[in-house]
Amino acid sequence: MTFKSLLLSLGLLLVIGANQQASANVVGFQVSGAFPTLGAYSGTVSIDVTLGSITAADITVPGFLEFNGSIASGVDFQAIPDTAYFQVLNADSALLQISFTTPGGSLVGFTGGSIFEEFLGTLNPDGFTRTEVDSAYEGNGGSVGSISAIASVPEPATWAMMVLGFCGLGFMAYRRTSKPALMVA
View 1 (cartoon, rainbow, N blue to C red):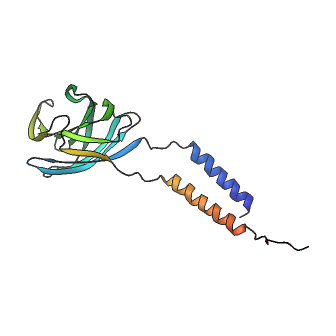
View 2: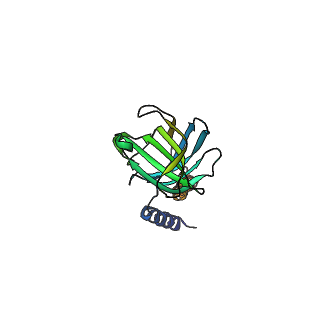
View 3: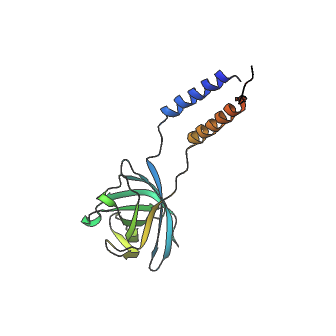
């Protein structure tokens, strides 16, 4: 492979990489807390921090199927400023609701918060009312759990560009010729 073809390949990869839209808007968050009688729960929630919406949830509560079904979310939980909440169903129509603090009352730019209210119940056949199984409430300012960002992993395109960069540096070092410090004529 010649030096020109290497540069052409590198330039082509740069153009392709620059035209791809990154999916860095969706950030994963670790959710953890404890119910008074059911015990500890944990899982993940994906939040689009650009649009301010919750895109996915996967939370495990002892004695229940995983909560990873349909999601409803909102801000200013029960008219409390600087808060947000989400509700997620599992396959048995059990409902998990988690309310948490969020700076500025929005999920846009969200980086983490404290869970101040959690509710687990079952939906009644009418689909609107619910029967409580377990809940905890500490009020806005108290904490029964946390939502914290998970460290992100670079995308494959980023890894490819880093490897190509190191290969290019290695190739340049290999091709470099040593010049004597003093030339005698």
